[in-house]
Length: 159
Image 1 (cartoon, helix red, strand yellow):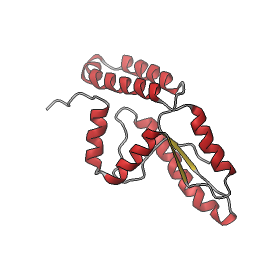
Image 2: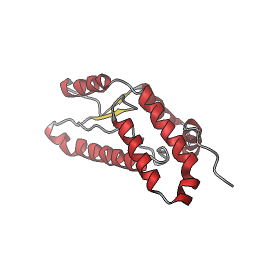
Image 3: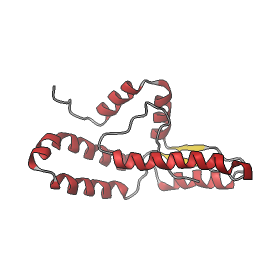
């Protein structure tokens, strides 16, 4: 069983700006889980990906603190250039933390995967994970980018 956050499988998948290292780690877990599921299939060993949306955990506060530390270490011209974008990403992290599902919901999905004789390959947990998966199947990458940018309330880039 692999616990990756929602990381769409589309070649046009989009991840929020300023969340790249986190998204990359989750994409790696997803690829590993997909590969492992197929490798272990001949022996009847099931591998399920647990793909939750935002979860109400301390990660949000830790991430916001780290982001603040990194922003403070940037040269002043970079701070000036990136300040509105970093602030929008910070607010997005705060909102996600407040809206996160209880960890027990994720635990329920894990319990199902462990106890089921035929577990699903993927468990999408939380409304945001399901909505994103649906959007990734139905909408072009550029539209997802636009929705992501607007949803994060990012300022328009300078022209």
